[in-house]
Length: 212
Image (cartoon, rainbow, N blue to C red; front, top):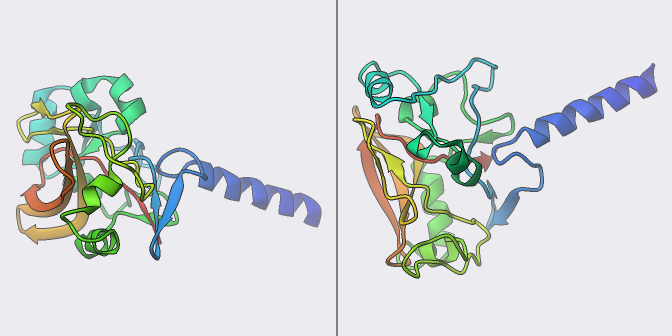
C-alpha cells in the first residue's frame, strides 16, 4: 500500500505541474532569482476549480467590468489566438480571492516586475531581451536573451474592442494603483523598452505567472 501511495503522490504532483500556466512543467525560465513561466496564462478556472466566466461579446465584457466581476476572452474571440498568446483577463480576475494562478505560482506584483527589468539592465533595454525572436510585426522582434519569450498578444478595451495584436504585449501586475486602476507592463514592436503604466481594471491583458 505504501508503494501505491507513493506512486499516486507522484502522479498528483506531476498533474499539478503539467497544469501550470503555460501547460507544461518545463515551460519556465530562471531570470536572476526569479522563476517565470515562459507562456501566458491560459486557464478558464480559478485555483479552487470555480469557472472564470468567458466574455464573448462586447456587451458581456463591458458588463463584467462595470460589475467588477472576473472575465476572460481570446483576442477577437478566436481560440487560435489563445493557442499562441493565452487568454486575456480583466484585473478583477487577477485580484479574485479564489486565485487565478495555479498552485505554486502567483501573479507578479508591480515590485516583482521592477525586479525583473532591473536585473535585465533597466526599463530602457530590458524589452529587447524579453521579446521573442519572432512574431512581432514591422521588424519588432527581440533577442529573447532572457528566455521570457514575450509575444504581442494585444489587449481588450473596457468597451470590448480589441487592439494591437502583433504590435504590443500587455501584462497585468497584481498591484493596485488607485481605486479604479492597476499597474501593468507593456512591450512594443518599435523599441526595446519595458513601459510601466496603470490602466482601468476593466481592460483585458495577458497574465504571466511567477513561481512562489
